[in-house]
Image (cartoon, rainbow, N blue to C red; front, side, top):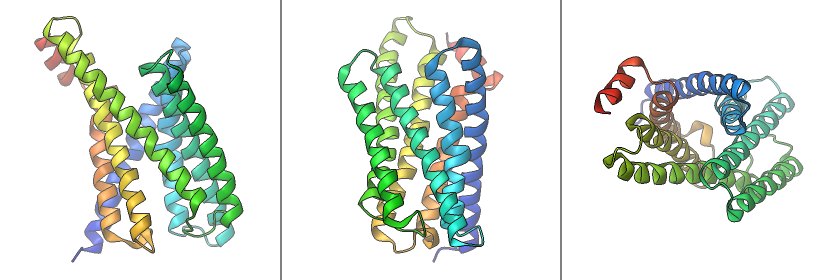
Length: 247
């Protein structure tokens, strides 16, 4: 029997960790992009802020009926899904630009994802006006497309890590840089796991917001994603020194 108090604590801890890490890392990347004028940093920073610090908290609050009326919660859900879709579209674009630059199929995938998000959002609005914990083909289209963004990024980052390890043996890459590919892959893999768990839960549970195993699993995935994401973008001095010693 799942203890509701422990479930809520785990969910709260995982959600708080992911929101805090996404907010701090996202703002840092946006400030970096302001200095470098580089679009990948801007896209990734915007994605962290929009998804972790805005989209996820708003949609979770709406699903739990935080506001007093159905209309106000529907508006909260609409804003939350818009932020999530924009964040995941930025992830698609960043992945194509960073890992698959110049490849037509990658650019095409970004366009397909953008059209899927638009179709999903409009369809969800027409189906239910974002009221209640409703599902349908339009909703699932958006959820699957959001899940796919992090599956692709995780794959590409771990693929680059595998290639970097071969170069590392020849002294052709900085060990900290190689490690960041691994950390980014683990962090995005944790987000992918959270989305995948929620997708399965929507198919199995009538009321996802009240299912203890879903809350516990997504909370654990949030905790798992937060740690490598922090180390990848904001490694503490002792962590840097460890890799400098190896180099």
